[in-house]
Image (tube, rainbow, N blue to C red; front, side, top):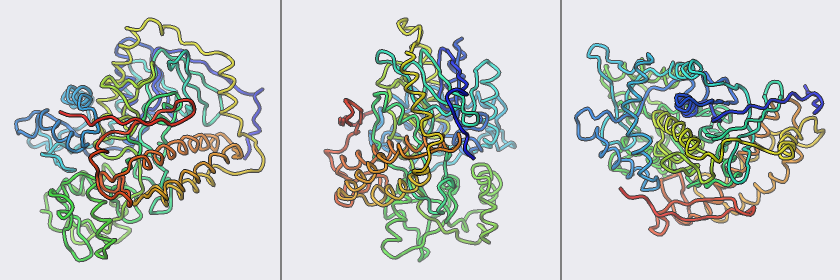
Length: 568
């Protein structure tokens, strides 16, 4: 039903605050908590309900932690060596040391104080830990994280963080070269919101819905389908540098079920076998199933391509204690409907194989996130007043990483305010607000033309065909042409209600992120991280490309610069 929108009926709200946090997931909520503890006014804004926003909204079964419990692998030094190897030096190693290792033990203790059950082994009052993805030891704490997000959200509300729910932030506000807030609209009522802030933190997570889902349903995604690259797009338009956008994450999921369960399965000792019943991953990495995440879809891709598919999860060899822990504690927490899926498929994981597929692509690239907004160890972007946290930034991946990075961003944004007195009064002109307002609502009641989903479906088709697995120069140039055509069609897309308007603005951000992925993939003439960036015309890694590739908007052009890899 059309909303018959008119500016005359528009309700407007202007909120002035010290710190604006865009994104109410784990990173954003921790950023808001940290800033509020400094005595600052904080506004936390999300498209959803905040209490269960983000990729961790439904729960999580593993928490990456360095506890310094005694083994050589459970040390800061061992973690840094592993993380440097995992990311191939494409993450500034000062970042995990500052934002993660200095906080993680305290973060685990904090969650236990809040009542989150971190110790599932109640008989020994100890943590149950497993390892995967190339880790030198058992870094993951197995825990029941279903109440984690509501709990930390309640803490934020209790100490005075102001929540703004169901607000789609569409763009940042700039004053004299620094970010001073953002604009958006209520996705239910349509009200126009202006947020003026002395510092702004973007924390809107990863990027989904850019590639065709194997199940044919774009919202059946193994991460939150709300995550459309809003932070990456807004930051780029504001002049911030993005880093290594060409690397796309693929994982393994059960056939037609977009929730991977990969960490739980290989962490507990599960195998991945081909159609001949062979464990094959040791051909692709010395650690086999315990190798980096990118190794597993890479191996499955070649086994199927060379005629040894399909491939399967195999848990039949696990001892009863391990399979019970997997079925009763891990899989039901991280993937609520996983066991329902198995039941409907008639699969008994104690005695049957479970067929797997390669998932749709998403950003960031993997656990060791190398793709996203470039930030300093203080979580600052290259634009004054703008900070970034969580999966949208190049910091430390995983749930625990996002929470530690969010806390860092909140504290550092507070320091920025206290040290720079020139930003005490955020302002923006009425003329700029009028332009932003017009951009938000201009598609309402537009007759004829296209619907957002027609262009979004075409976007996924282009990305899957030309910027997916097995990229080539010719295919990437074709993608650039096709994406440009879609961009030209955007003015003709109409929205009949505020939900469609939200989807339209998501589409705009997705198109920009898709262009940045494609341009980066064309620029990087090599292959690296398996399927994450596999150029069929440059099928090996090249020493001259062992670097990070930064992109920045300057004079309406995308400028690239190479940055040498980080060293320990």
